[in-house]
Length: 208
Ligand SMILES: [Zn+2]
Image (cartoon, rainbow, N blue to C red; front, side, top):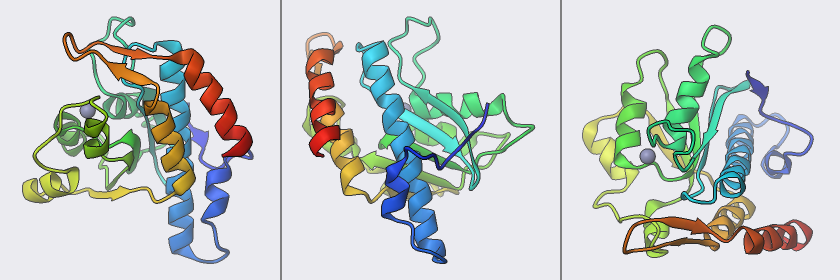
C-alpha cells in the first residue's frame, strides 16, 4: 500500500512550505516524512514497549511507499531495524511506486547504512534522520559509534546524501519518546514507560 505524504493532520509540512519555492517544498516533504516516522516510533513504543522505539518511512516525491517500526521480535522475524524493514515494505509496492528517500527517527546504524547502499531493486538517493546517534548514546540507549553517518558514508563513497531534518517541534517530539525509554545495561533489555509517555504526549500535543 502506498499513501500520500501530505495529509490534513500533518502540520509539520505547513511550517516549511513557501509558495513556489522548491527548497521549502523539499523541506516540507522531509518534515512530513519525519512526522510520519515519529508516529510509527510511537506505535512501536505502545505496541511493543520492549525495544528502542524507532520509526522509518521510504518515499519518493509523491508517495510514502513503505513504513515500519522497531519490534521486539515477537513477530519472530530477525531483528531488522525500522529503516531496512521500511525498504522491505516498499518492495511489495515496487510495481506501483519506487522510493528514493528514506527518513528515520534516529540516525541509522552502520549495518543499516550498508543495507541501504546495497539495496538492488531501488536506488536510495537521500537518507534523513531526526536525532543523532551521539544524542541517543548520551542517553545510554545505544553504543556510541566512532564515526557519524556523514563521516562513514563519505568515507565509503555511498551514493546517497545524508541530512538531519531541521524542525524544532519534531526534534522535541522525537526526544520526548526517548525520555521514557530505559535500557538495562546488565542485559541490554529495553523498557518503555508507556503510561508516563502517554501523559507526556498528551501534554505535548496540548501545549507543545
Ligand atoms: Zn540499524
